[in-house]
Amino acid sequence: MSPRRLAIVLLAMCAIALPFLLWGFRTYQLAFAATHAIAILGLNLIAGQAGLISFGHGAFYGLGAYTLAVMMRHGSMSAYAGILAAALVCLVAGYLFGRVVARLAGFHLALTTFALALAVPQMLKSSPLSPWTGGVQGLYLDRPSAPLGLPVSQDQWWYFVTLGILALLLWMARNLVAGRTGRAIRAMRDHPIAAQAFGIDVAQYTALTFAVGAAYAGVAGALAALLLDFIAPESFTYWLSILLLVGSVFGGMTSVWGAVVGGLFLQFWPDIASMVSRNLVLTVFGALLVLSMRFMPGGVAQMVSAWRPGQRP
Image 1: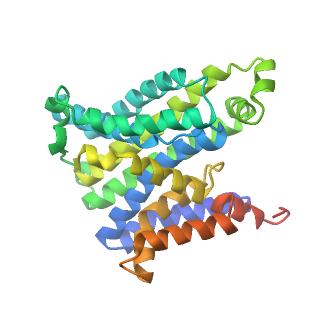
Image 2 (image 1 turned 60 degrees about the vertical axis):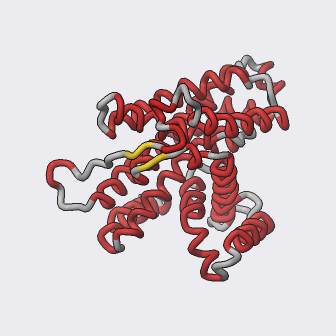
Image 3 (image 1 turned 180 degrees about the horizontal axis):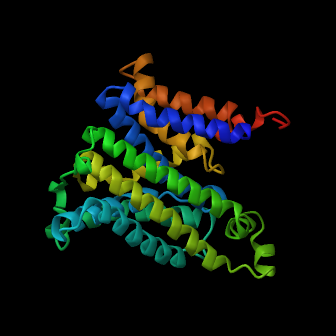
């Protein structure tokens, strides 16, 4: 077994053992960190691999959460089927949005995605949709317990569900990035004119990238809704999109595995900052971000790659 595969196996064993070694709230936090990692993984495909600036990722996150909630509350659908429905709805929504913005780039694309992040929470609060979404009151959900009488708590069960989905999506993203589609997406990012000259349909690949990234965000939003047992439009403001972008940059925007680091960072940075000063949490967060960008411009993933034997820093 290669050292890389051995490291992956050891990390997987540690991740499986953690819920039995930590108290319940820490298990819950780790499950939430995994949902952040799934959302950031989708953003890494959009922004890191395809080079498409997106400030609207939180909108798809919210769409996934509300799709699951509506399906469970009004469609009598199970939570597991609701997660799949959230992925499919966001896949279609991401593809349609990608077709609309396919000809945009730079600041124009950034402003369009930012407008999406501003518009979605207001739509969720609108009167025509309030019978389904609960309006400003939000919706409460019933998170199912472990099936078949498994001897694990509810938090432990959903930690394993979230971890399993994260592992599956990491594998899928890695294969996509390493395959022909990934090469076409990176060519579109690095040399769009040359990519078109070689027959790559830039508009189609832009739409497909947004579709896959949005589907990842939808799955993350659905899992987050189940972990919270409650959703409201104020949970999916533009600030969420900015935080996801920060996590992507910190972990490594061009890295698949960097999404896991970004998810852990987003979940635990308040705890780290409060150790320094409880009154200056955002200030400490900003300082950590500035220092990371100064000394790790490519994120944690790039720094770790530079330390490998035979790799140049």
